[in-house]
Length: 314
Image 1 (cartoon, one colour):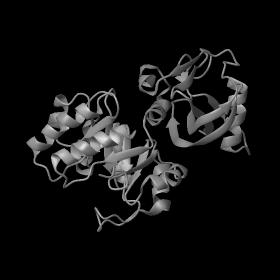
Image 2 (cartoon, helix red, strand yellow):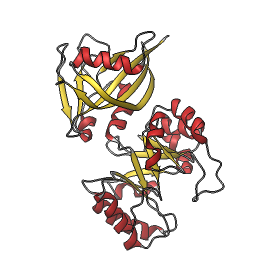
Image 3 (cartoon, rainbow, N blue to C red):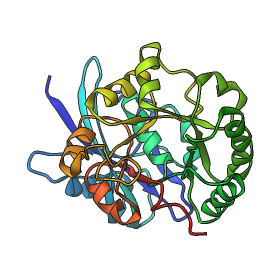
Image 4 (tube, one colour):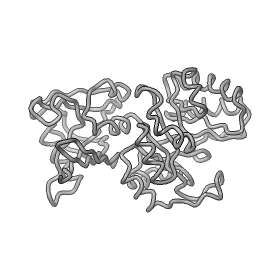
């Protein structure tokens, strides 16, 4: 069966809300909500197809867009390649030019709408920021909490509490404080035994590669209303993350790092190849910082993750 090439847009308004449209009942996956877009014609670039489709469907002219995510999905009756771009600047007032209902939705509320199955990673990508802070180890607790507070105040919206040198009860105490600092402002991702899941309902969970290998065959350990992520380093681990139904992954190391000097870096070319085969939002990690964000987008990544490059200066 031939794969249909489709372009779609995550259109962001000035207030951060995202525009979605409802498919006509007569269409494939009719009655469900979608991100506006349509088929890429033969010989047409993705950007040209996006501009044409959004003009026809919504009556707007795109003035700025960037790659967000690519998703291949096989329905029983149709195989699609969805190439998604984020549009954050356009001219005109969007309206349902083909009679389709539209809605401007806060990113956190997207999960309440019914989308086609292929759109699940796109919904995750639309809700996630483009930077993921991982806390440094070897910090005293007051210093660690102060840094998290500063990072949240500076606009970082996704933070992993990584403290491999802490013993379990101490990590749990710090996690309680970190949850409070992030409440309503940033999504906190915790690490640790899955037995702790019930104690931190507001937090997401970031699995180590070892946990991924152990638990992936058992499936997702909690419902989709909580974020689940995993650390990946190769194609096998990315496949396990998909099997488990995680929401996003980190892929590392892209370049040599101080933290893991012995790990062989993937390099940008191999990272791009791995991302192309993975229908999940991917944060590139290892020797990258905010300055590599644009390069990460062009490689197909959600954005960049890191420790030192993202940690606020004292």
